[in-house]
Image 1 (spheres, rainbow, N blue to C red):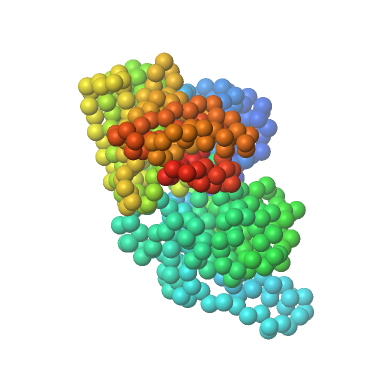
Image 2 (tube, rainbow, N blue to C red; image 1 turned 90 degrees about the horizontal axis):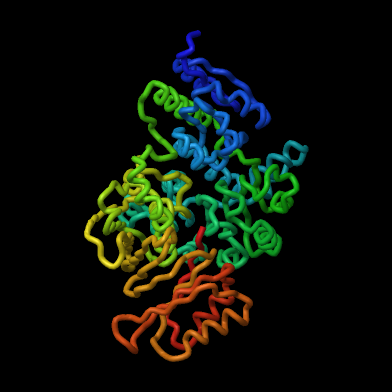
Length: 530
């Protein structure tokens, strides 16, 4: 074989159909289960690497991949790949974001049916020689299904449930009302969904904002007759709280495919007789594995032939002189997206990104992708790049606008994000000064505060004496350190003011309620920063 023939290393098991596609692009070597040091030692021979979830593609490993041009990962997540390190070496990373959509959605419906018709219990009893016809099931027709996260999988679940004549409600602030109307889904706030639904199914990625999203307080909102289905991420649910609710009879049942730690043979959820469990099988269908594998194999083949990939995880290379100007604003873009996500209310309709000053003179596509990643971080696992940013926004029914003004104002460059929803508009501005990110405006309130800590609190209150002291007393009495604080007055003295605080720890719900109870406090929003 000639030296110019590309070499492809397959480090984990993938579909045979995918292997056959890869063979049309070059020499394929299948070497599964290699220790990191052995994999690094041979990686320099290869132009392409294909992995699944077990191989950790670290920055150290990539030092050995001196010839690598592409890394393929069948599946949605790329948590096991250091994408930034790959990008810095000019290595394209691709995945298959649609590969397991149908299989996971179908598994969620199957779990719900198994739960309501007592199929696992009845099966086990009859196999054990017991004929028991006392199991009374529940019909799904006309029941209310609450879908938490209306991304690709959540949308499929909603469509399947509508086919079963269920009434579907959903929580996802980054799906437009117009898109929801086309799906026949009513959009509601999370607490309202939990109160109304007969069944709740989770379809969110795991982030600091969604970690234990369904805790004891959220479970307490659900009907006693309600049931929870989780085929997304185990840590979305406080497992001990779920077990306690089931055993106490405040929740009727649950169906779980994912766990906080796996294998989950000793997990408390598995011990409950009111739970239907499967060992992380939602994506394990012949079609899903074949589809994900062939999607990635085709992209590897295309890149090795000099063609662009269909679903790149990392963005194409931006000219160095442009990135030198944009790099300080990547963190600004991320912070603004996270703050806007935490401050907004209602269903998003339109996103407007306004670049002013020097950054408006170059392509700002990387900033747009960074903003969307931050905004949608709690709604989708799909990594957003300059290649797919517009398509992701369009897929959720969001209008995306960009405005550029090369004329500088207060700062040499500034970035503004405006999110228009069914309940109003949230505007957040920021800049970079000496390599540090600053928030310079939130709605009508000018600021200059550096969002460094894990948590920020934004209050809107009456412009009256002692408000700073009252907030300080609440924080101090609860042992919460304030590292930064700034007060901004509204347009009219004696009207309203905003207080922005950077906190050294997350704000417990009881402390948040104490802040809201302060006389003269109008509203307060907590933002968790990543």
